[in-house]
Image 1: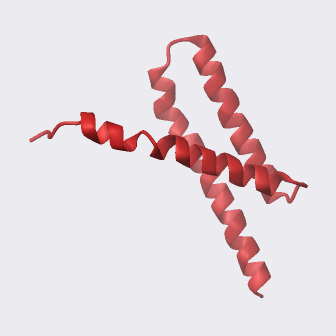
Image 2: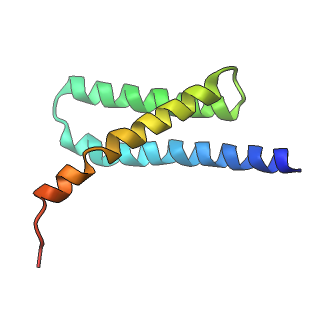
Length: 92
């Protein structure tokens, strides 16, 4: 019972991470005007989504890779946040 529940929760979280990766791609596409940056962004999103789908399908060694990619993505977003707060200014 617990194993089936944790497996279901794990699959749901992986699918949510894939969906968030695709949702994040839309604002990122608007920033880039170079074809190389566009290709790099699409390749990165493709790798994340394919790894997530393979993790849901229970491919060998993919769960660990998917967890690593999601953690690395979270660190890449979280580390520059304090610098952005220092550079920001109040609107009102």
